Length: 102
Image (cartoon, rainbow, N blue to C red; front, side):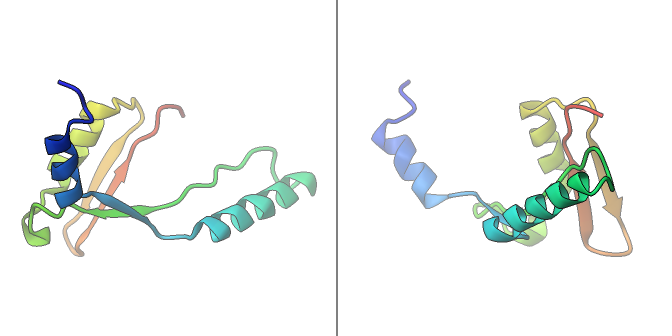
């Protein structure tokens, strides 16, 4: 089937999955610029700037979403050898990391 058929596009519009970054694009760029300054000053030779994203899957109530199931979907779609899943039972926090290199 063609991925741009109207029925599939309508379905995507009804149930969009939106990733919300915890830092704005402007803040992210400022952080990169700061890292460049640290490198020029000799504080480091390499820095990795990342951003945290949050996602809610609209078709599933948030209280019923399975964080480990989502991790497994991500791992299936992006089989990163250095990935991890952390479940902190004391708090409603779940950490997913997908990284392809050390």
